[in-house]
Figure 1 (cartoon, rainbow, N blue to C red):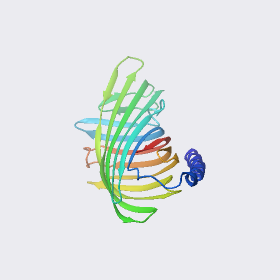
Figure 2 (figure 1 turned 180 degrees about the vertical axis):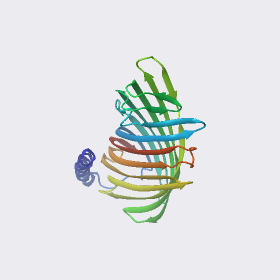
Figure 3 (figure 1 turned 60 degrees about the horizontal axis):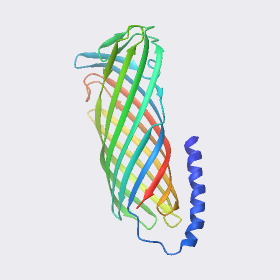
Figure 4 (figure 1 turned 90 degrees about the vertical axis):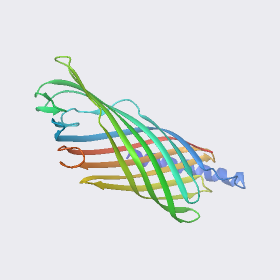
Length: 262
């Protein structure tokens, strides 16, 4: 519901922009670069079961650790767009915190915790993305393209046993290729923009589905508001790329930010 309200706000800004565009007259040269900063609202749900490198794991971030978003995560992006090509660099960082007594026996990277153990868990997730888009269909106000890139995920997870003071830390990383399609449209003399995308990747049983929507409205040609929504689903079965681990992860991100074109 919140992302819908954000998009409706952008439509209101676009209406004001349309009024302003009629007063500005002849448009200036095309603005190819976009710099954006944003604040996001992420949610994360993941479970890990099995073993890798001789270390067993059995844990769920929701039912076991109770991880919840902490603070107001910030992110940034830099984009370049031409008639046929596009490039995108993006960075996001998210933090999660949870404190609870374990409802069952769990194992985190080979370290067991008995039911009833009081744990404080903290996770920091950093996301880096590089993406190239080739627009194979181009119309005056719409385009459809092919996306190729990579998304790199790095997580720092620590668990502190509040009864003994012992602290455990793990830092897994994963690079996920980004392959898919995207499409965009513009209106109000270029002051209203939107983009949708769908990416899918599969390797040795690992599957990743990612899709999202990005909408922008510019009150002035070089300055505007941005709202976005994104969903990620990753499944890694035993015997795939992470040893005998069975990993399931669902993540959603939505937010609002500023966009500067130049």
